[in-house]
Image 1: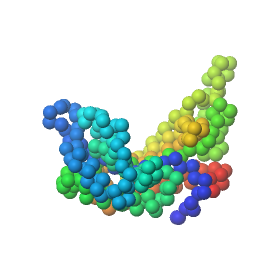
Image 2: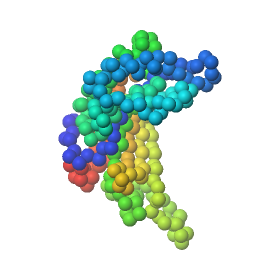
Image 3: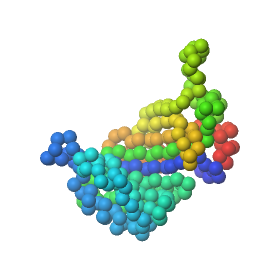
Image 4: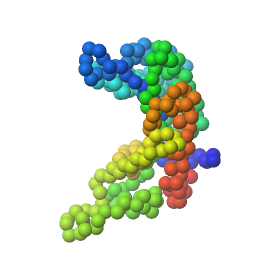
Length: 259
């Protein structure tokens, strides 16, 4: 079912992440490296500069190779401080989107990203062994944790019921409003094959205190990562599941607020 686009969407960031296997360093036990990484960076830039011409090197690019595995080090953007963007590091590549996010565009950018990766990686058919996929969405709602009861808000607005024993606070001198919140739940999923994670936590957005919630799907099992078509199929199934959870969570007052 095609959803209507929300005018006041709470999205902070949408992220697609792909990881591939690193090789054991023959000269150092426990260290994993990508022997093709330095070549890959140049090739990726050559293949994305038409759409992502603004390149920047992240501070993590100066990390020693021994600890840089799966850490993004390079960014490619449409323009300075503009989205979407691509990030690249040893064993990892991501597509990141924010206010510009629309699934149809994000999906197309994912297809392009996969084409670039498989075309850029030296002899990808035998050297590029995908080992993990993640589709992740982070949303935020302005919330005053000192003034309002977050447990009531979660129950009434998001259908998440967290109950703590009242005796923990009665005559103990302990305030029942939490200073910090970080709730995590994860569940196995059959379609897509993987695990779905729901996280609710406090933080800030644009300098304002906020309740954030993250929905993330991670792949499980190498058999679903065989080729680009399988990866896109997994991503589409993941998006459908996350979309379903999102609208079930915000159904009611929050949906009207975001419309």
